[in-house]
Image (cartoon, rainbow, N blue to C red; front, top):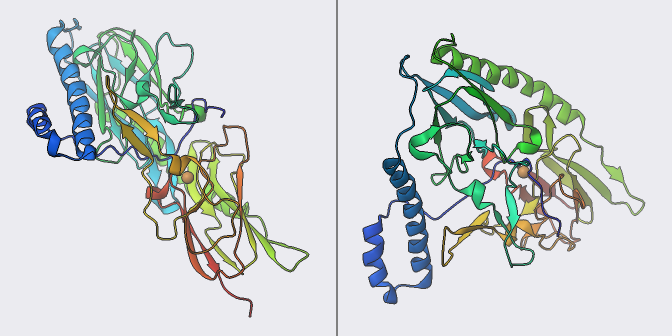
Length: 401
Ligand SMILES: [Cu+2]
């Protein structure tokens, strides 16, 4: 299959089992008893070890390398940049770093803070001629996809002292416990450093750090935070009108020659940095035998799924898989990736799903279901990628009077 390029994504959950509270010693003693453990538990423990090792590596390298020399002539200051934003009243994601541009002195530290339900990264890619892909094929496994390890795991210079010459990455920042909340760098050399969100590179989510020598006058950390808030508020002031446009774009149902009706649903809506993670309309009243067509609009580059779970447990987006060496692979769950019962008449039993539909990838950017002739009731559909942002809809099927 065609592989996605670096692309915008909406909210994705990178759920790694809750393992981070286990320490290394614990793991080793556990491993000694592993003959009595089931395989799943052992796997979880190994993943724990991998994460522990990653953390130890980061701490170890920080301790063993000399701290870069910084300009001592000014008192170092701490600045904050917010990563993403939202407006929950309209299911809106505000794609950006707030403030987008920041000016600091050599020796100052910037902390990027996770600020929304969507996932993002803070990624510096000096010397790379293209943005790393978020999703990559699993080497040697046909049709299987995983999160690019370059993006999934943090890349931090020793002691967080950054001279702008190396790849630096926050790992995936998001609302889940296992996702990164903060990422800090202290800048050691004057210069201009651009960074991106790998998840939303296709939507041009970028930022810039301008590092000046101590003699330059720069805005205070408070002024920078105020500016960030101002930029967020400007986008928030637009969500209402973007939402009105999304509602206005809803297509009218069509009457078919055989007496049935075809309903149209737009999946998401975008304008500039404002992205609505919602179905338009999110409520459809239909009859058995009718058809529903969900379409990704051309103005939004977010991928989605259209999924009727019919009471089934929602699948995890990502499945960590241990490796004999190195960190685990974070596999894209085939239950999310692939269509299920996509050509079957819709009933209230079993899972019906479009699979992963991505406007940046070639292929069909719509999903069509025919409602079964014996199906009635209220059927919920969701987007598996954006469900925590409440991206859901209702299909209410009743017999004709
Ligand atoms: Cu979605």
